[in-house]
Structures are given as structure tokens and as C-alpha cells.
Amino acid sequence: MPALPFSRATFPLYLAPMAGVTDKSFRQICKNYGADVLVTEFVSAEGVFRRNQRTREYLDFDEIERPIGVQLFGADAAHMAEAARQVVDWVAPDFIDLNFGCPVNKVVAKNGGSALLKDCPTLTTVAESVVQAVAPVPVTAKIRIGWDADLINAPRVAKILENCGIAALAVHGRTRAQGYSGEADWRVIGEVAQSTALPVIGNGDLFSAETVSRRRAETKISGAMIGRAAMSAPWIFRQIKHYLTTGEALSPPLFFERWNVILDHCRAQVREWGVEEPAIRSLRARLMAYSKNLPEAKSLRDKFQHVSTIAEVEEIAHRHVGENESAGSLKTLAGGLI
Ligand SMILES: Cc1cc2nc3c(=O)[nH]c(=O)nc-3n(C[C@H](O)[C@H](O)[C@H](O)COP(=O)(O)O)c2cc1C
Image 1 (cartoon, rainbow, N blue to C red):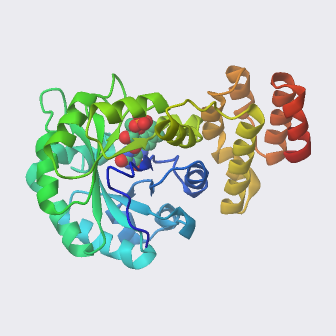
Image 2 (cartoon, helix red, strand yellow):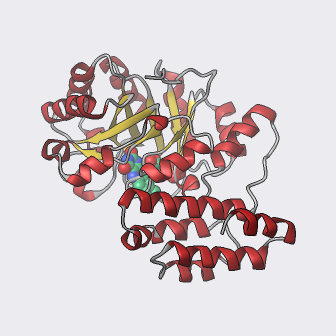
């Protein structure tokens, strides 16, 4: 297993776990663009026990994705510990990540995800039990800064998790009550990084290389975690690395390269699913996210709503590049893409 790059010197870039988004095909695209650490979509401890098909798919990864963590959620310490042990036996991830940040009602109603931020005794037993169950495999955690504006307790939770033997902590700078609205509060992320010995991975609203660099300079974070920005621009990892190394901004890829990413994603999804039409239909929302970074986004979104085959996506790509990029790049498209 590769060592986890948690030191401040290496400043790892994490792809944020995102349910319905960070499946194997997408994770590998981000890896190709320089994401250092990957995490699966969240998996319920109960699903692990049942070993149902969906859970198998969530846990599936290729060796090239290492270092990779499997993210688990649940509120029952014994179940979480047993599920973590089974996952380690089953797929041997590089680490287990505990979800203490999910805001979704279905999860919170069962005291899982961010609900544990207001139940620190249970959070403690979950973390301790999982750490003990899978040692020496590292266990990390992902939290929000608190439950709501009246309970912003991330620094205290970080201390608790540090004492439980957690190896690193990702902090999303919003409360559960905020959902995804408002802005991530980087002041609290900074406080957490300042007050704990744990490597803190800062997360929330990192939409450009310059922002990552600024947040790194302002806080003691040991790494950065990128979520929504990667959905429409997976090359952001390359841009961030370039900026952090040289101090210069790297332009985003030309349209034909962006389209190559989109088409590669479609092909990988079809390979994974083994059947073309359901695979491409499952990608419609993802294609719409990619369109955010392309001209004529609205017209593209309308077209993506109806695609079912790779040929249809290729046809849209061909026309779009023809209409929007210079003749030089078009040659590349004609020679190498379609
Ligand atoms: C579609 C979607 C699904 C998500 N699923 C998860 C998840 O399964 N586990 C988790 O810890 N966070 C999940 N998150 C939260 C992200 O990991 C991240 O904390 C959040 O998007 C803030 O980062 P960003 O501003 O870079 O997007 C999800 C976010 C989105 C947008």
C-alpha cells in the first residue's frame, strides 16, 4: 500500500467523496489530472452487511486509484466497526473514512452523518471502535464545522477525534443547517488546523488554483479537498499543482481536450456497465455538469438531456468543437477524437 501523503510538505489534493458522482470512472479521470487521494462515494454500514450489488459497486476500485479510502456512514459503533473490518478484508482500501458530515435527512434521522456532531459521545465510540477494529489500517474522518450557527464545534470535535486515533481530518466549512448554501467558513477551518495535531484537509468552495493557494497561506491546512469544481473541470487538480509549484496560472484545456475527457468518461462508463444505453443515460446529469465549462452551455444541456449512445455524444462534440474552436485544434479533433 502506498503511504498516505498527509504531511504539510506534500500538500495532497483530495477528490471529495460525492455520492452519485465519484464513481470509478470519474475518480480515474481526476487521478489522471493529479488528484493525490481518492475516496469512494459513501457506503452505509448496513449495506456492507447485506453485500448487495449496489454496495459492491461502491466499493469497487482499481489498483491505480491508490491511495484510496472507503467512506462509511452509520451511527451504531459495533456495526460500523464490523462493517469497516469487512471492507478491509474485502477490498483492502488504504484507509477507512468516517462520514460525520452528511446533511441528508434520511441519514441524519438515523443519527448518522452530521447528526453525530451534536452527539459527541456516540461520535467518540464510533471513531474509537472503528480505529480499533481495523488497526493498523488508518482511519480518517470528514466533518462539517458544526450542526448549525448555534453549534459550531469543529475544533472540539477535532480534539476528540485526535484522541480517538484518527489519522487525518477533512473539514467542510459549512454547518449541517447550511446544506450547500452560503459560503464555507474558512476561519473555522483555520481554527481547527491551528488547534489540532491532526493533518487537516480543508474543504469548501475551492473553485480555483488561486483560492487553494490563498487558503493554504492563510491557514495551517495540510491538504485541500475539491468537490464540485472537479465535477465540471476535473483538470483543476493539474491547474492547482501547477500554480502551487510555479505561482503561475495554467490555462484550462482547449475544448477538444475537454471533449476528450467527456468522451473518455462515456466510454469508461459503458465499459463499467457493459450496456451502452443505460450507461450513457446515467451520465446525463454528469454531462450537464461538464457543460458548465463550455460555451453555449444551455444548448448543450438541452442536448445532453436526450443522449443515450456514445455516437450521439460524439456528434454533439464534433459540431461544438467545429463551431467554437480554431481550425488548428479542429485538426486534432478530426485526427484524434472522432
Ligand atoms: C453531489 C454531491 C454528493 C456528495 N456526497 C458526499 C458523500 O457521499 N460523502 C461526503 O462526505 N460528502 C459528500 N458531499 C460533500 C462534498 O464531499 C464536499 O464536502 C462539498 O461538496 C463541499 O466541497 P466543494 O465546495 O469543493 O464542493 C457531496 C457533495 C455533492 C455536491
